[in-house]
Image 1: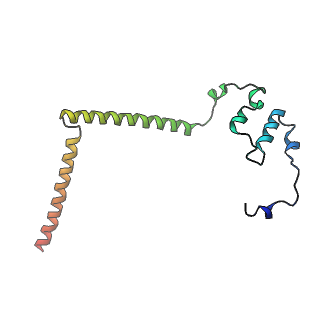
Image 2: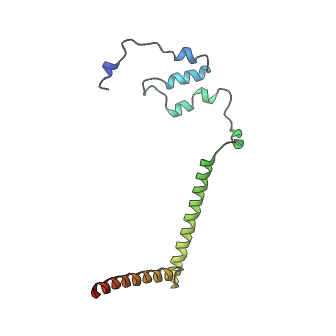
Image 3: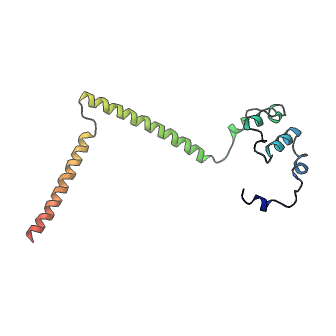
Length: 144
């Protein structure tokens, strides 16, 4: 850092972490917290080292499944709606994929694809209407 020398405190204050938390947590937890809060990133434990620490491996209570979460009450609308939306999108993709496969199959058989004639008819009618509109404008201009 460019300004480190100017911003460094004039005196080093003793850490109050130990006096605040040593009595509140277990010795293994305190040891782990001290290791994780080291200023030097090279001296800090990695995530795998933290998970192998005695706090996680030997301390009571032993890890267990959170069966209470199955009966958790509350407003989970966002999570539920997101899951429903993902499921709906998946079903839509599968339906489109199946329809695309049927369309390809019909094209190879030579049968017209459902809706293809209607699309051509609508396109043709739109072109006729546009042409008539242009001719109507030209007729009005010629009559003047």
